[in-house]
Amino acid sequence: MSFEQTFKNKTGKGYEADIKSDRPIRSIVKAISWRVIGTIDTMIISWFITGQLTMALTIGSIEVITKMVLYYGHERIWNFIKWRK
Image (cartoon, rainbow, N blue to C red; front, side):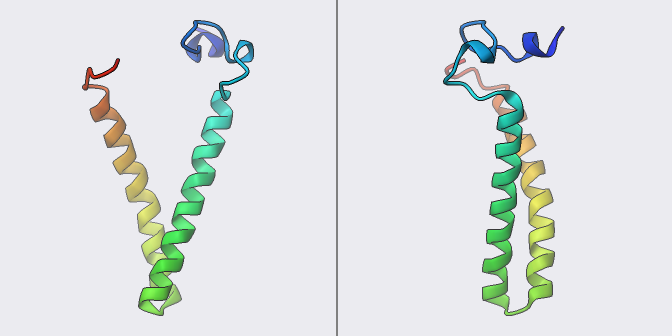
């Protein structure tokens, strides 16, 4: 199965045919950039609350991993939910 066949939009056409859809690589880059922004936000808030940069970096480092694991689990659970599929 080709990459294009794997990532078809709802009409069955490739993403090139649907100007309103993002290509999968764009979605991946957006997800990564959003995760970076979220982790930086957590680090800044942690630094503000604790007053310790080392603690803030530690919290942010743990948070980035736990959020990815939680998101993966969330997605897998949603695969079992039939609602609006």
